[in-house]
Image (cartoon, rainbow, N blue to C red; front, side, top):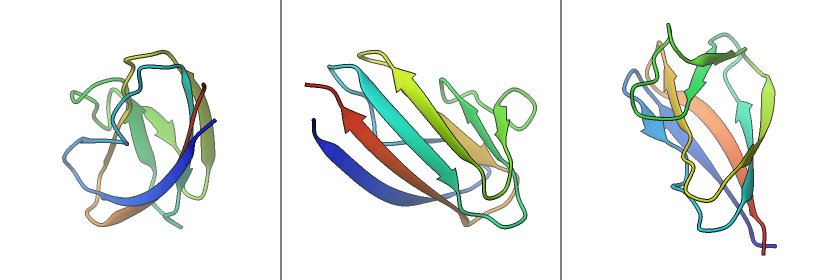
Length: 89
């Protein structure tokens, strides 16, 4: 069960988190910002009005199917986000 981790800096342009996988996978996301919400969606059209809101300092865990992708966007620049991807064998 391979595990990869990373940190990204999100801005007002949607950004994909770590691609997709040919197997099922879990993705853990942490909004590192102390003040700003993060918005999560399934494609690059995610926005602050269409995405699922992840409050400042909150976490989210998702079970994803093969080929699924996850995108994030912020209302500010340099928004820090940490993630951990667990790929099922």
